[in-house]
Length: 78
Image (tube, rainbow, N blue to C red; front, side):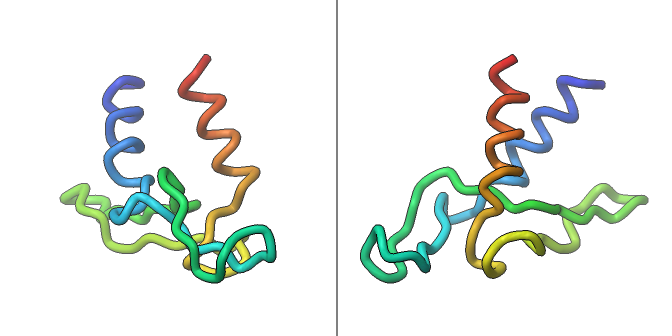
């Protein structure tokens, strides 16, 4: 069960384009960064299909909640 859950997270939590947008002054405006994640992925409880993806704790839905992403990375490396 744990391996199946981890596989599903890896498949659905990482953004389709592999990145998020930067809104901060350290990088060019709208620069893309690989490997960013969605904070929340909603699933249909019957079919298991993805119904929505969002990041309410991030700056915007186009960005990543960095603390949550760090927890995810830590979880996969332990």
